[in-house]
Figure (spheres, rainbow, N blue to C red):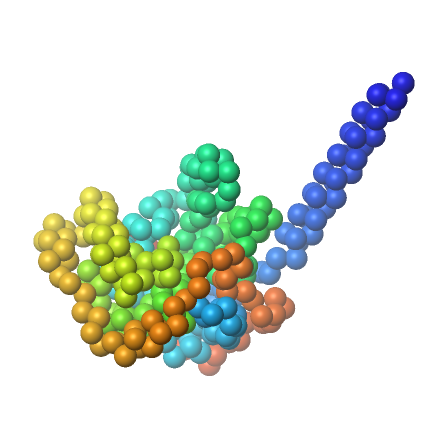
Amino acid sequence: MRSPFRFRTILAALAVSALLLAAWVGVSILTLPSVAPLARPGASMTITVKDWHRKDHRFVVGPRNPRWTPYRAIPAALKKAVVASEDANFYSHEGVDYEAIGEAIKTDWRKGKFVHGGSTITQQLAKNLFLTREKTVIRKVKEFVLARRMDDALSKSRILELYLNVVELGPMVYGVGHAAHYYFGKHPSALTVRECAFLASMLPGPKIYNPYRTMDRVMKRSDRILRRMVAARMISREEYDAALSEVPNLEGIERKVEKTLETPPPEEAPGGGPAVIDPSLPLESPQPGTAEDSAPERPDAD
């Protein structure tokens, strides 16, 4: 008589646990911040980013940041290199690439841990603006929901603009505006095709793809990105050949590099991504006329 009773007790406990979990997930989704304000191109918001020693720093996303680079000032080659590197289906999916997620689940299942998240550019942006890098199921659910909402509320060009202005590309180097000056001493609009592929090659993690420690690794990944670009007709064969023959000039920041190498950065660890300082913090609107929105574009548009 005890076995059926125990069985019913276990079932009841599982049912209660499932309900509690569903309620927790539901509350987590309901309390997510709104993405609608991000559609205002002239607005700015403040988030927290971490340096390579795990210290928090305030970071402004938007025109109030002096290194902010508007969409139209970002070279076409850089946009294409990032899409080729990070999210080949960026212009066709709705914020989430289900095929990529399926492949990532298979890989993670074989390895027995979270290795590949199958994240799109939109999902990465959601994580960088609102979440942490903690690899948990609930964070992936939040990332999924925010990415779908972003794709509904924002144009592809706006998503790419935000992403390229918050992505980490070095020790406290966030955004392509800072990265172009940090590595090459120039404005992003002056970057060559090779330099664009070079920056895109560091996106999986600048601590891993660090040109001052593993230059060969960065160059090889840069070459792969260039091959993807020419295969997808993002660049011409002439541009491809010219890019391959170019060696990025990084001599302008030798003293910065030496200082960085004196205290090597720690290894990658969960929880190291930007997180919103105050989820209720409103986006700050600058004076009218500070920025102009960009219309959705075709994959081969500038």
